[in-house]
Structures are given as C-alpha cells and as structure tokens.
Image 1 (spheres, one colour):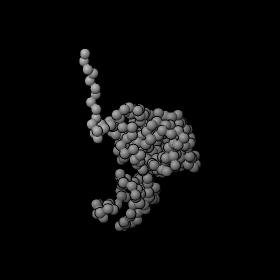
Image 2 (cartoon, one colour):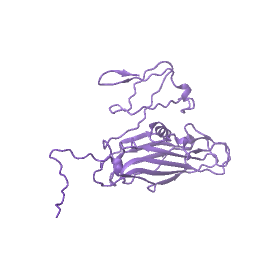
Image 3 (tube, helix red, strand yellow):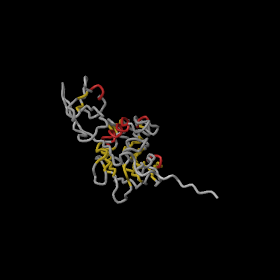
Image 4 (tube, helix red, strand yellow):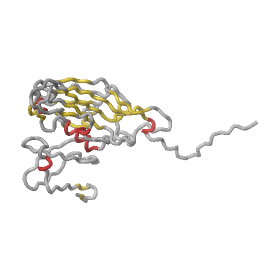
Amino acid sequence: MSTPTMPPQAKPGAQAPALARFRSGTQRTLSSDGYFNSQVPGAAAVDLPVYNPSSNNYLRGLWVHAKCPTSANAATVVFGGDMPLGAYSTVVFQDANEKPIVGPFDSYTLAMVSKFGGYQNLGDPRASAQFTAVAGSGGTGGSFTFVLYVPVEVNLRDGFGSLQNQSSASTFQLKLTLAASTAIYTTAPTTLAAVQTTIYEDGWWKGNQAGVSPTPPQAGSTQYWTRGTYNGLNGAQQIQVAQGLGYPIRMYMLLNYDVSNSTRATGDTDFPDPFQLIFMAPASGTSRS
C-alpha cells in the first residue's frame, strides 16, 4: 500500500507567489450604452443630455461618434476654423463629485489630445476611415463624420490609469455642448442637418480569478487633461505655465491661435521662433530646456 504524498508546505516567513498581472484576468468590453442624441445646431450652443457610463468594473475611456448627414444642399458650404472636429464647443468628463478629469475644452482640443496623447496606433481622428468633411456646393455639402476618444486609461499594456467603475449610484459624467451653427460653418448648408451623437463605453471586465491581481498597477492613479490660455505679444515674452502644478507632468501640448481669427489657420507661421521651454525641478532647483 502506497502512502499518499502531501503537497509541500510553505516555509514560515516565506513570501507568497507574485500575482499575475491585472490584464491577464480581464476581458475588454465595448458597448453603446444606448446613448444617442440628434440635435440640429442652432443660433446658440446647445447642452446635450449628460452621459453616465454603466458599471463595467474598470473604465478605459469613451468613444464619441458624431455624424451630420446633410442633403439637397445648394450653397457653397465653408467650414469654420477647427471644424468639423470642433463641433462640440465644450467637452468635460468628470468624476462623481463633478471634478473634471478631461476638459473642459472644445472637441478640437480633444482631437489633439487623441493625436498626441499616444493612446491609439492611429491617433489623428482625421486619418481615420470614419472621418469625412464635405465642403463646397454639392448636395451633401456640410456633411461630416468623426470619432473622438476621451482617454481615461494611460497604458493599454497593463491597464494603468483605468478607473474603477462599479457603482451605479455614483457614476462618472460626460457633458457635451453642441456648438452654434455659425461656429461650425462660415457658410452653412441650405438646410442645417442634425448632428447625431453616439457614445460608446470602453472598459475592462474583471473576474475573480485566484492568483491574478484584482486591480491595475497603482490603482486609483488618474491622469488629467486640462487647458489654459496664454496671450502672446509682439516681441520677446516670458510666460509661466500654471496648468498641472502640484501633479507629476505627463506632457504639455501647445496649440497656437491667431487672435484675429481665433483659428489655427496661421498657427504654424505665427509660432514664436526661437522658442524655449524651461522646466525647473523644485527639489534641486535645476532647470532643463
């Protein structure tokens, strides 16, 4: 008769085996949540209904799909500056306590966050197969389509920055304001069409697998995107940037506008030359440029 073999026992004081990474126990989720809004741009900006993501364990980000299908147009349509990507004059994503996480700023700025933030392999919304902007005198003049990303997660590889989203009573909020028709178009189509807004929620479903980390790295870490405006003058000028003070800085993004037309039409040619950015570390007092 053989004697059963008992599994080896951990030695007293021995360290527990390391948990597998959070991503190994997750499944990506992408849902529309049923949010759809159709709104014709008016003479003034219009607040759209607030969007609250459904509980999905961890929130990665939100996709905003805007579609405006015009028809029977007879005018020579001209889009305004930063349009149609700037069709939402205000975008703000905030926590349950109404503290902004992304924004508030316009959707053109959000498009630049997508382009330069490094969240997708194809960051520029204008390079997407979904992007269209029909100007001129054709029957569909004034039509446009684009998809924008509202980033929450910082790193897809390990889920760093994704936020716990498990309470249906205390939810995140996305607020959008549709810009006025006179902002979207310099010359509007014959008949203004509705801007159709659909929002998709991107997240992680997390099971309770043994041996797998239940949270992403540094759970609760949150990235913030905010915008500040600094007016430049003719000649040399030194400006102290106040955005993001008190937090580790991930990146700065500079958008240069001509105040005479409030667009980036001459942004590149108007950009200061030479330009120097000086970063000073508070602990050592040393600076880098």
